[in-house]
Image (tube, rainbow, N blue to C red; front, side, top):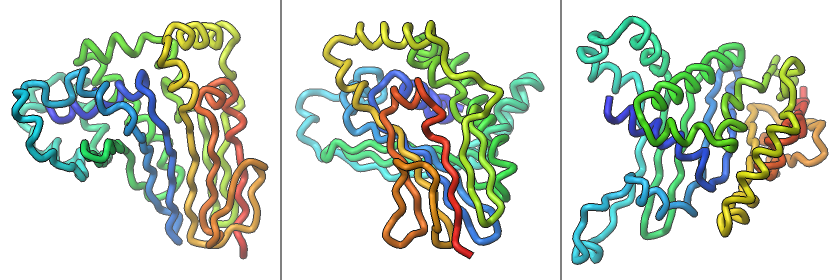
Length: 269
């Protein structure tokens, strides 16, 4: 359970730390695929150490020792199996919350020498119809971590964190093998002026960190088994092999105008 709590505490730190987001979906011929949300946190290695995610107990003479690189994949179903006895002692509600994380995969790449830190989480899916539930399970896991981590709970109260809360639950996807659509759900309103003002005020209070947050990006990447015929969003780009479409936006602008990420991809016959 400590591993699970630590990993999702990392997720909550992301929402108050400068990083670049990449939302990626890869489709197979049969409509199944993999969703992955990746955070490039290379610029915040030092911040993570200060928040207790690095080894702060080393002596000064240890700094010359070789720093190890990490390239790991964590499967929550394996962690849950290891902690089955402990989980069984929890309330039925807690057990359900934890078991909802069973299909989550977390990927970590970190190299202190190269100031590299990529943190991604996701899940495979049998069809796109099952993806929304997987995304909801990830959100539940984040909230569960909040309850058990005082620092994460405090951070989640910020305007920045609230603007990102349940972000992917506000997005709809459809795919029939010929046409893919990503859209901001009509029944969900865009941020109110009050929410935008709170976000801007929080940004203005960041001092020297403001420019770093202003440069944050959110990138969409969708990989298909067939070549792409067209994409509706004028800012989207099609790869040279015509099987990948990408769209990069400023993160803050995406939060304020999420419908700018709407797009329709038409595949060749």
